[in-house]
Image (cartoon, rainbow, N blue to C red; front, side, top):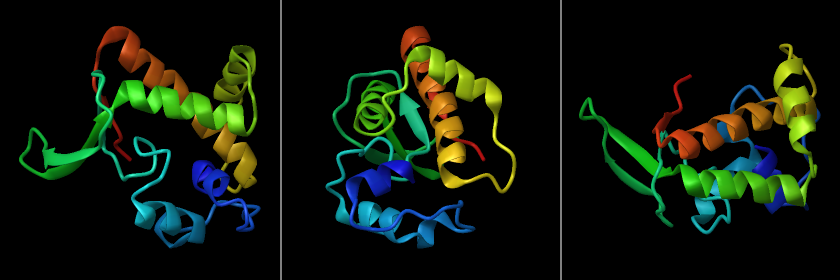
Length: 137
């Protein structure tokens, strides 16, 4: 969501997380554009593979269900770009936010920093250990 508002700075960022991300105006615009600069992040990806692919694609997962795939290399790069465009957090700050956590009802920026820190950490581990990453929530 933070990436969607970075792409659409004229839209007012909400103070708290919305109940339904899909109805958020910035998220809707990023998903509908198809030309988002955060394709591995804002394309409803479920699986990130540790391969260098510049594209996002749809295919059957191991269970035969349709899923969206992208590269964990691309995800790591996009997350780094998002950080540079917004917070400019150091690795020490990322560790702080990953450990700090986020309580239900926290302001959007607190939730976004926490989620970013965890997501960046997992994306890096996917690349480093050459393991796929699955979004399961």
